[in-house]
Amino acid sequence: MDEKIMQEILHELFSSLEDLETQSRAILQFLKDKGITNEKELAPYFERAGTASSVRWRAVRARIDYLLSSAMKTTEQDAKKESQKALENRHEPSDTGAESARGDETEKDINDRQKTETSAA
Image (tube, rainbow, N blue to C red):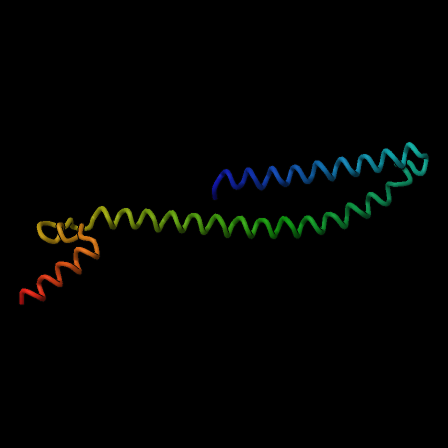
């Protein structure tokens, strides 16, 4: 997989996590400053939220693992195909003589040559 793509994905992920942390800390601090609650009163809520979040994130991790492994396999398969093509091209016999000259002809050249050969016959 392309390293640049992985860096972009991680950058976006860290950005999102940073935003979430900022928001949750701001809300917690607001609640404390207003005297609405304290950490002791919030502890059971944190525990329940943590459990629910753990389940969701476990599913996300499994999905990401699947997607990344699939992408890595595709990349590896593409690399193998390219190396096989390179090996095949290296072992192909090279064209010689007229075959080589005709290999450089464009479609127009071939059509013109065929017309000339047909009219000469």
